[in-house]
Amino acid sequence: MDNFAFGKINFIMIGLSMVLVIIGFVMMTGASSTETHFDPEIFSSSRISVAPMICLVGFLSIIAGIMYRPRKNKGQE
Image 1: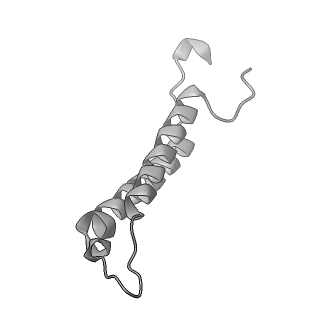
Image 2: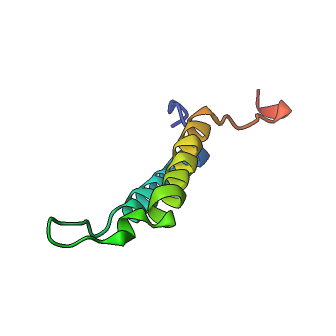
């Protein structure tokens, strides 16, 4: 069972980070403007600035989850 490249904490970090990225993408979606109706909601601050920042944090957290390496105790070497 110790042959995995990632530990339990890595998988949890990556999973939570993926959920964060999905939340960011869902925040970016919404009703769009058509030829006959203009929806000013497409320029809201949550769609233009907040959601991409959440996605960025999620992607950086995925990298941190991949790079994370737990410390080994001195007695377990």
